[in-house]
Each structure stands twice: as C-alpha cells, then as structure tokens.
Figure 1 (spheres, rainbow over the protein chains, first blue to last red):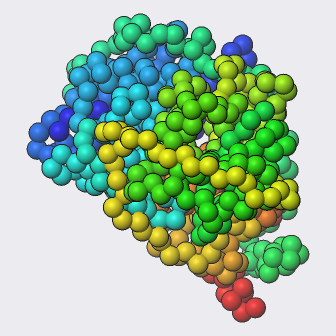
Figure 2 (cartoon, each protein chain N blue to C red):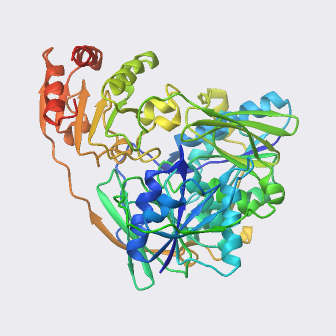
Figure 3 (cartoon, chains in turn cyan, green):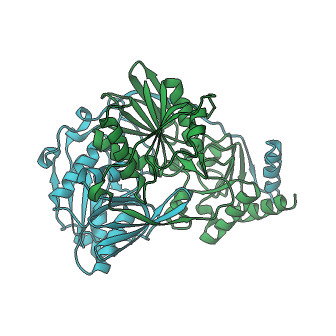
Length: 258
Length: 317
C-alpha cells in the first residue's frame, strides 16, 4: 500500500504570529517546523503501510524558500521520500490553488492508494484543502477521520460528526483527513534522523507541475483591511487560599446562572 | 443579491446556525435555504426566518454530504439559478460541501468568518486572526457565487414573520466513483447537556489536569451547571478527549455566557476560540498564565484542589 501524506511546514506556533505589512500575508521567514497536526497523518500512514506489509509513505509539501526542515522531521519518522513545491510566485495562494498544487505534486509521485491530510493547518486553518484536493483528483474522500482501518482495497473509517461518529466505508484510492489525537505520533529516533538527511526530496515549482496561474493572480480574494480587535481586560485575580471555590460560586450567583 | 444558506436539521428543527445565517442573509438580499436531505420538517421554520425558497436534495442515501450536496448545488447552478453568495456554517458538513463546490465552480473559499458586508456587488467578510487580536477583512474579487463559512453565533437568529416557502427538489445527480464512500452506521454519543457551541456555560479542561481520568471533574462540573464540557488542543492531541471537544482556532469557537477554563494556560490557539465569552473564569497554578490576562475572575491555584470543592459546593445547593 502506497500512502502520500500532505504535510505543512509552519512557523513555530509558540512564537507570536505576525502579518507582513506590505502584503498582509503571514510572515513565514524564519525556520519552519512540521505542523503538529500533520504528525498524526504521518504516523497513521506508517502504521497502515506496516500492517499492509508492503509499500511506502511519501510526502508532499508546499513552502517558501526551499524549506525542508519540517519534511525532514516526517522523513525521520519513517517516510521514504518527498516532493517540495517552493516558488516565490506561490505567495498569496488561496486554499483552492494550494489544493491544485498539492494534487499536481501527488500526480508527479504517480498517485497513491491513499492520500492523508490533517483536518486543517495550525497556521492558516482554512480547513478545506483535503476535500478540495479530493475533488481535483476526482477521488472519494472521508474527512474528520478518527479511526481508520484498511482491508481488501477499501477503508473502514469512523468519521467525527456533531452528534457522535459515522462508520463509513470507502474504496481505495481515496483521500482522508485525520483529526488530532487519532494515533500517537512516534518520536524520530537518532537513526531515523540520520537516515532522513539522505532521503530524496525533489524541489519543484508550480510551473514544473503545470499549475498556472497561482499566488495573488489566482486568488479570488484581496485583503481590504486589517484592524486591531478590542482588547479584553483582566478582572479580579486572586491566589487560592482554600476558599477560591467560594469566589467562583459567588461570581456565578451574581450572574444568576446558578 | 441572491443568497443561498446551507441549512441543517437537528432533531426535527433547523440548527441555530442555519437560522443565524438566514437572518443575516435576508438583511443582505433574497434568502434561499439549501437543505441536504428532506426539508419537510424544517421548511416552515426556515420560512419564518426569511427563506423565500427552499431547495432540498431529499435523502442522501448514505452518501457523505460534501460530495453529494455540492453536486446537487452545482446542478441547480448549471440549471440557471446561480446565487451571488452561498453562506455555510463553519462545521464539518459546511466545510466539506463548500470545498467540493469551490473546485466545481473554480471559486475561492473564505472560512472562519464572523461578519459580512455587501456594497453593491462587492462582498467582504471579516475573520479574527492571532487569537482574535487582529481582524482581517477580505473582499471577493471574482464574480459570484462567493463561498463563505461563518462561525456559530456570528449573527443573532431572529424570525422575520415570513410565510411558508416554496420547496423545490434539488436531487443529487449521479456521482460516479467520487461518491463511493458510504455511511454504514450512525453512532450518536450520549450527551445529556447542550451542544458545545450552543451552550450558555462551557467548562473546559487542559494540561493542568495532568491525567486523562481527571477530565471527569470537567464533565461533572459542566453537568452541574447545565453546560457543555470542552477542552484545550493539548489534551485533544494527547488523546484524552475527542476532537469534537476542542475549543480553539482549530476546533470549535464558542461564545457562551460563562466560560470556565480549568488548567488551561491560554495559548493563542485556545484564546481565539473562547475570548468572545461574556464572562471568563480561569483556574490555573501559574499566575503568569496568559489566560489571566482576559479572565474576569482568575483563581491562582491547583485545579485538583479548587474543582473538587467547587463541585461539592454546587452539589450541596
């Protein structure tokens, strides 16, 4: 079973985000890391390939400045190879263009039995790319997967819903998006980290993939205004002396909710 | 302006989110509801909230809404009724349908919005970023249909006094192999309380609980307050509770009357999902935790000591 995982390399979420004042896009200049949301997809892919007993895990990513550090993390976990789409013309790309680019990169890898993505990225969180990719690729999809088993050329997926979950069957090839916490991502071993350095990562441009136009030219949106939201002020902060709970009870009573 | 709202049913009534969007849509133009399923139980209520027409696909026969409803929408658009704007709720179904439709129509999607304005045919939406500290307004630049998703409680739902709408069948066309995924069983998880994004009180737990079993305290407190339990991303990632519990930028955005954050430090990712609460109570050991910067009442203390006493005091009432 061959699985392709879409991984995003993002600015460290622990650092405060910033918009570039000239373009109003998120600054992505510093070192990028593997989006933690994607580590679940990588782990799931590795487990599915292991239980199938054959095949490999490949990666596709789109990032500025030929950034590969996040890809190397996923390779160190055990993925075999990757394609990075890096191209200054991609700046300003919307989710639809991103989906077209990733779908083309998946095609360049020769497709796969299964494509896995996170439900949304931690930095942009548009949350539509996996399903858009499925439509571009002409594949069935199951989004918000919280449990996935592959058997006999099809998937059995528990799909998160508002009220619980649905059991869904889906023939392969297919696209799935996985929620956080579905599996426990492994930590890359020292051996894995060393091996990752020599694993192949092909860097291509949008034009190499035949996807045009991209970036601002293709985005059907323009940022009109950026304003500061009204700040919330801190209220009463007290140290718990064993009676802190009573303050909460009084606060709730005052609001007439108890 | 001709506006469609993707409307959903829950227990025989339209969801609150559907009514919120219809209320906003009718203030901007002519509102049409588009239902993925049978609309007979909810058409009246949709009309009362401003829908002059209701498209209904009929039973989806186990197909996932993303692929099925988007195809039905595309068929109506190809048939000549093309809206200027389609409003979706920011939830699992809304996201999937708009994503599939965006490829079919080659139109961008704008998600996580909290507001919308229209001047002539120029449509702009507003999205909070960076923990809600910054508001970004984005304008659609192509021709419609514009596709936009809105967070719950972005608008107030108000009846318009409208009459029964015309219900028009919008059957799902043959989907071919892209429609090959099928729902074989539906599991409804027992939940006695209100929904997370509709509850007036939300009690959320985070890493400060130190272990998964302590989340019971959060559920117990939420139940006592007739609220809903929620969670920070950290404990969802750790597998303590499902993704559906997650409050934050990647998760649910809640705007309850009271939000109680227990053992949550207040990462930007979490704050964007709850700072719209009317009142915020925070319990955390670290007095430097960012959550105290936005709390109306902050208790610097150990959740393992404060919560049991709070639960006991509420039980005694």
